[in-house]
Length: 199
Picture 1 (cartoon, rainbow, N blue to C red):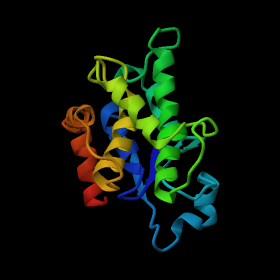
Picture 2 (picture 1 turned 180 degrees about the horizontal axis):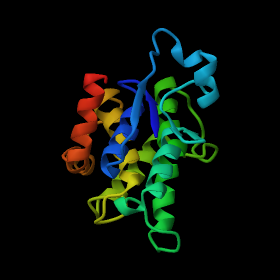
Picture 3 (picture 1 turned 180 degrees about the vertical axis):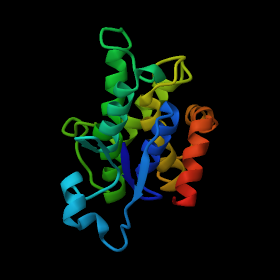
């Protein structure tokens, strides 16, 4: 496998996932400042010309949520996704999609200061999205209860950015405790070092 990535981007969540599953993966750094992502060779891997992207033999996967889902299914022995047919599978898929369809949209809405009727936006509103997450984390340590999953890689990454990086949301006790649990994982610490070192 080959990961196309750049530091201080959504690549961090895929680096984290790769560390969680313990799979060997070649890292290819894309120089965003020089516009390397717009070259035809990379466009063939990810037509959106963004990072991250994963190449696995003949398979190419872009969009960080899709990459994380792909890796969870490819490496079931890591135990980061409920199997098809398990009761927890539904909520797992819900939280995987919640990241891209609700959290990202809510962040964009807040950043751009766009006012939309809650009933018209698929994510409801910025407040609704983060209230739902607060509710989900008020009764259990992880998104699926007691067990850490690939969904937590996405949700914790999103919360980290919206609270710690973008400063768009005041820390809530549920989020602070959740991020402390997730960020103390050895796989996250290794991924964070890779991202900081940029290699």
